[in-house]
Length: 328
Image (cartoon, rainbow, N blue to C red; front, side):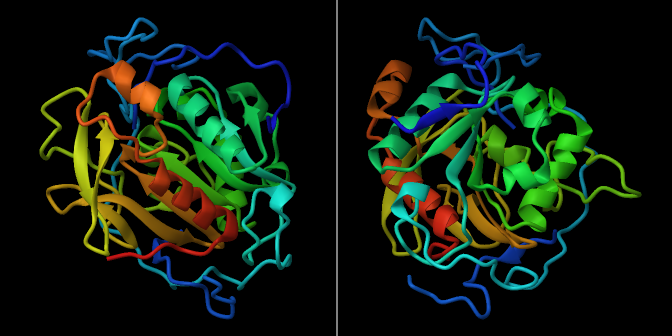
């Protein structure tokens, strides 16, 4: 096992879930070598999975508080200031050895209020299988971390759940610290469903808090995906990749991701998984749940129930090494 805990964490219910810089295309940065359920309460309403450990709620509900935004500011395709110091990361740091910024622990796994415990468990099992170190942080523990503390990790991971609760139960200073960690200190960010919703918001003004979520990427608040499969609370949707292949990935109320650096598209052609540079940090976000295990898909009773953890691992590998994936 590679799990370490900051403190004793609150219990996480197994299948509970309710989701929700300028954006720059995630080309390899100039000058870089290219070596290729919810804990806490949720105010959401609706029907969750029928498994016995579900609290209900609209999965991936982004929650309230967004003032939207008009348009997206497009910046440089490389992180500002170039690469951070570090060279090759050791395998013990959760890297495959490709060049990228140095870090002490691979992934900071947010397990706070509003997060979906099943997805967290599946994600951690995947990280274990690949020898990636990680550390959990509850809402209170994340609040206690400075941006510099967050910068000791290769990736900050925000799972699906209830986005309004995930962000609302953390302090405004924590939102600012997350923005600083990603945009200025170069930490990568991965978020699925609610973790994608809370990633994007208009830039705060006058030194205030972001109007919605964590806002590690500056842009308009993401829209819900409303194409095939979204007439159900949750369903497998057939995503397509740039090489022409397709794969079923679970959708559970998630968003359409930014139309830049698109890694996968929904059946409608809308972006389902996107990558982008936000300042110095590489951000990869998906409106779907590629990290779910076969057991979790079986519990949900979806068909076909083949897991998509291959793309989930590629996403984390890209985030850890800061080597972007192929895009449309």
